[in-house]
Length: 374
Image 1 (cartoon, rainbow, N blue to C red):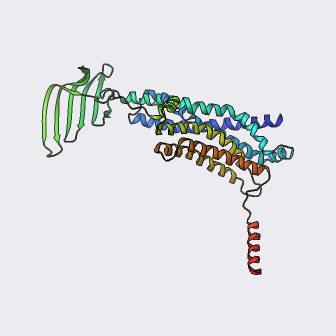
Image 2: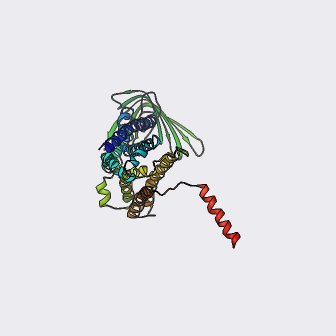
Image 3: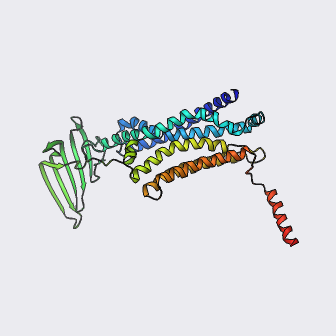
């Protein structure tokens, strides 16, 4: 059918252009943030591309949802602006007849959004966290780059090495500053190496000196040594507790705690919101040739932002126990779907929601006349 094919072609062009623009913008922002994390020592500089890829993959469902919504709204508003919508409507097409071609175009994207939110999101977030944790859980001396000051994993030490040897296992001209509650220690040595003693890692320093400064009375204690051993990365390999974002969807269903149900509501909500936004775009996309042409576009954008924020806010409410999982899912998403269908039905039967001040003035004058007559 000419109507369906022409509408799908224009939707595809608009969706593709919007997707490229949004991916470019989001990718640039994430690249800047990832490079900032790498400069602070939170991400391995050699793994920036991997972290960026996993992060981008985890946010792809949001980008696809926004691209689909913008494509629907912009295409329909273009039809209204060029009077093509009037031609289709006067030719026998009804507004509700646009639902079928829109869904025929959108269902592969909606399916992809569900897959990304339910399966790909926890996997990509887990991979990204593993890369960051692996970099954070290295030994203190291994964290140090030659010629740079670097903070230790527990935040209590600052290291500096002039030159590293033997694949980061040994260092030359080592400088260490340790801050504790009662004292501050400054240690310097010509060489340092990592040695395993009783399954614990120690930093063995050779030919150096150690200065202790008391934080209570500011007393000083200076000592020299030929060999000195200090334990490093005490909590480096402590196992992190699993979080809801990295938990597979099936595990969220099997163990329905508040945090798991909150995460599950967000994952399902992303797919349901994408479906409802297609209907909302059809219901709100309109151009009034006599009024402000961008009014309906701004309203659609506001509805999108409000809806997405409600999905995120609903997740927090479920985690806090302020609302149930089913109450949020049915109340929010089913309510939005019913509202979109109601607006479509009122527009189909010819009900206008435009605010007419002239009609209000006539009504007010009639009320004043009735008061005068009484």
